[in-house]
Amino acid sequence: MNLVLLGPPGAGKGTIAGIVREKLGIPHISTGDLFRAAIKNETPLGLKVKEILASGELVPDSVTVDMVKERIAQSDCKNGMILDGFPRTVYQADELAKMVKIDHVINFSLSEESVVKRLSGRRMCVSTGKIYHIIYNPPKVEGKDDDTGEPLIQRDDDKEDAIRNRLKVYQESTEPLITYYKEKGLLRTIDASAAPDAVAESFLTALNL
Ligand code: AP5
Image 1: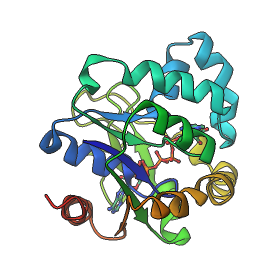
Image 2: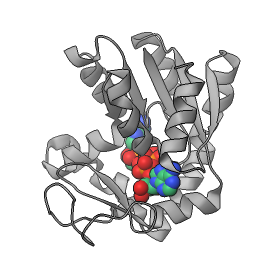
Image 3: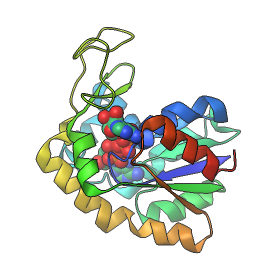
Image 4: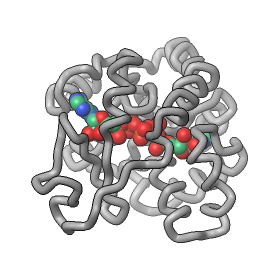
C-alpha cells in the first residue's frame, strides 16, 4: 500500500507515521528527515539545502524528486511506503504518479493556532529522529532523549520567522494538492487536533483498517 500524508507543517504527520508504520509493515519516508540527515552528514546535498531548510522555503523540485526516486527504489519499499512531506507541489505529485500508484492520501486537518503551538514546543533527537513536545509529549528527563540520553534540539525552522514562512509556503504550494487528490478520488481528511493515539485511530479507520 502506498500512502501520502498531506497537511500543514506540525500537523503531526511524522508522529502518526511513527505510531502506525509497524502495524502497516511499510517504511515511513520523510523527505524532511532525508534532508536533515544529509545536512547532519555534511553531504553535497546537505550543504546545498541547509540554508533552504532553515528558512522554511522548499528545496527545488528537481533535487527533491531525484532524492525520492533513489530512496523508493530501495528494497524495503517493495510492498509500499508512507510518504510524509512528499509531494509538496503539483509538479512533484505529477512526478510521483509516474513512479508508483498511490492508494490513499490522508490529509491532516489542524488550525493555524494549533500548528504554531505544536511547532514552537517541538524538540527532537538528531540521532534517533524521535519527536517530542515540551508540553504534549515531554521526554522523561527534561531536554534528553528517552532512549539515548542525548540532548534534544529545536529545529532551526521551528523558530518564529521560519514557522510563519513555512505556513505561507504551505498555503501557496502544497494546499492545492488537496483539490488535486480530491479530484482523483484519493483524499481522506482526518481531524488532527486530538491526542496522538486518537489521531492514529482515525488514520487507520480512514484506511478501513
Ligand atoms: P518536513 O520535515 O517535512 O516539515 P513539515 O512538513 O513542515 O512537517 P513537520 O515535520 O514540521 O511536521 P509534522 O506534521 O511531521 O509534525 P510532527 O509529527 O513533527 O520538511 C522540512 C523542510 O524540508 C521543508 O520546510 C522544506 O524546506 C524541506 N522539504 C521537505 N520535503 C520537501 C519537498 N517535498 N519539497 C521541497 N522541500 C521539501 O509534530 C509536531 C509537534 O507536535 C511535535 O512536537 C509533536 O510531539 C506534536 N504533536 C504531534 N501530534 C500531536 C497531537 N496529536 N497532539 C499534540 N501534540 C502533537
